[in-house]
Image 1 (cartoon, rainbow, N blue to C red):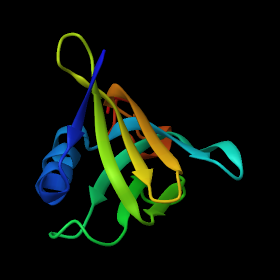
Image 2: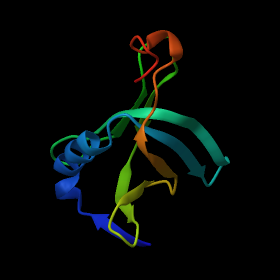
Image 3: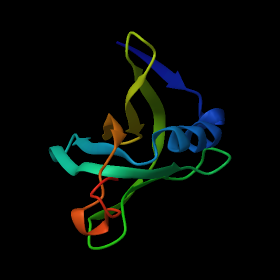
Image 4: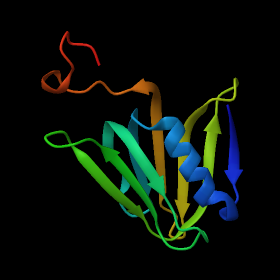
Length: 128
């Protein structure tokens, strides 16, 4: 595996394209805080999108989940300093890490493929 640093000037476009490529993928969010240790913020929720300001200032916003009654998550990453994408040997994007000014790291790990909708929201025949 290898990591690629995303320059701040590219964050807005990168997150827009990244969100389109990975929309609906099962995503787990880990927050690694110097004060609180490691916390799982979300597990296997579909990625809806990642947003930053065009100039790279301000927070980065994560949106995961789907329409109620399923879980939803809106998570703001304050004071982002660096963004890294973890690539597989084949070049596939496997994880995303955002490091904040206070040393907190927010890591998104995802599995390829879309999260299946709950049984009561699947089309007739049970396929999604």
